[in-house]
Image (cartoon, rainbow over all chains, first blue to last red; front, side, top):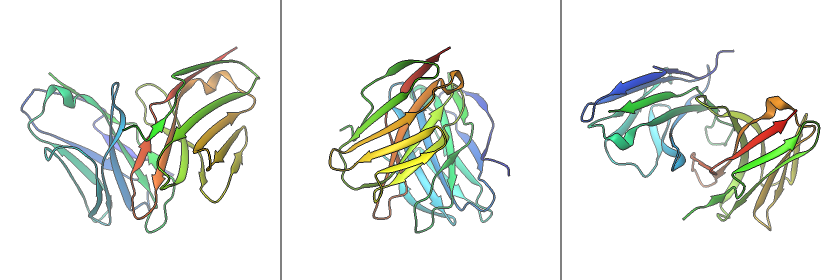
Length: 114
Length: 113
């Protein structure tokens, strides 16, 4: 059974640019969440999608956005990149519908903003 | 306001002995608790979970204990193996339709051969 796949694995962008990250969840999983990991802040929740609808959003500025497609694949977009956006971006998928279940993570996308 | 605290940033244990990782939380709305293991430059790997209606859950060498009155979660690894060396995160879901995980800052476990 394939796991959560995130592309690309590594990315270098310049300040002011925008970036799109992709996540393919485990087959059958309809919930996809995004997290940002930085050395100072640890793992922080960005947003969660279920059946193409955003159910939860973390405390991040509007430059961070996402969407989910009908096949449950999800994309995350960051516009007007800042140096502080350099981080490991992690995607997690789960079966969670109305009942909470475990979330399984991809390997992440390492974004470096220069 | 830190809702989840892993007070030990690091822990060293001899191979074959027990590793005990601890986590304290303040939010009484948390009702589903998980432990993840993470290697550098990789995503967290799910280890074990427990719901708030239980106080113990076992899976092989891993046992999670929940003390709701003390708002304390712990992970026991017995026996510890060198391959267990990683950063361990506790994480929590709260109820009422919240589908976000709140993570602790992590404890780096080193198992010494």
